[in-house]
Length: 201
Image (cartoon, helix red, strand yellow):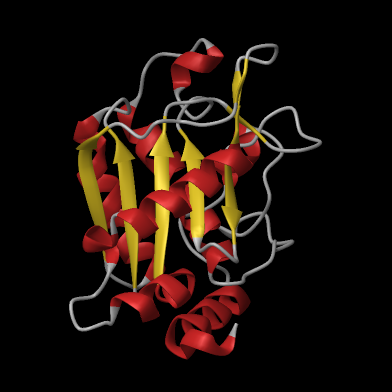
């Protein structure tokens, strides 16, 4: 069982290592990364100048099935992996494309529990988007916080009403920046139980 980051190389590649290492520390489980590749985004809406996050996740799941060599544990049967990979191997795509989902103007990220796939966009997480001075440390923190949030959903966690918890649902960047890079006590216990439990969610 593992968590994999597919890092679209159009997002600054120098951030991939610190984001991966911090995500592993926050989640308490190993996180690997796939670098130096461009993921072909699906679902571009020219009227919105945004990408449909649901269509991206469907494409990401198809990619994972075609490239089982990147995600499948060596000792696991391929047919078994293709049937249950959403349970064993979680995948998070980091992309520069601006995202939307049904009934939203934008999303920072989105997770699909049944597919075991999630996506986070760096587009609205950069200081530059808001007319502020560039700050890689702030971008790393936001990618880690939002990435851990979406991976939490992949393990079956719901939104939390604690504004400091990773699983709190932010309405804007200020809400996101107020969150800490940790799960509250209840969500931490829930996550640890689900990581250990495998099929139990």
